[in-house]
Image (tube, rainbow, N blue to C red):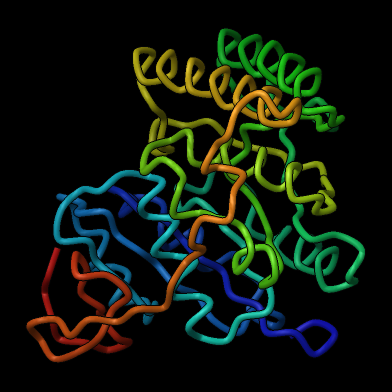
Length: 280
């Protein structure tokens, strides 16, 4: 805990067996109360390794997408009574040791959300970020800052911390189940007036780290442009959008699974710590 607030780290996982242990071992357990992994139907041994490490694990029965994975992560973190939730990719691209600093910024009640920025400190290229991704990152960020009226160093980091109030207030169910979920969530944070902080985060690009293809990157980029335009038109009251409306936030609805445990979605199975279930 920090300032009496319960902290949960969520790991949205897909084929993360090669880097999961290294990521998990680096999480500062002196302040983190819970670690949750949601596996999006990996075909490797991610689930078996997570169980071996004692991580509370939830499994999607089929691949639902990165955004859908996060929705499950946040549902289950809220169900645990978490006050602060840190989303960390289990591919060891982001340094888990910064969980303490990011959570502390939220625990201070100064910020509602904190981003681990690869751009602050100029560590992106040194860490191996491909040049085309760096250029795309800077161009899209400039475009979004202009349309959203913000001054963030980047909108595309996968390392984020949120207060419980954010996760309960934002209409996350209206967001995409794909990669643009992250970007839509930032636009929502701005639209709802939440305070966003940033911290410099060195990153590592390596063969084991997850990465989307060039084609998927183009689709993501177009989704980013669409999200920013929707925000600006909504801000000018020229467009109604469920991204920024009073759509339902995450609901803690649990359905019984075949093994008798519970999970927040009919498409998942929960593997509790020490479970003998070999799903995956």
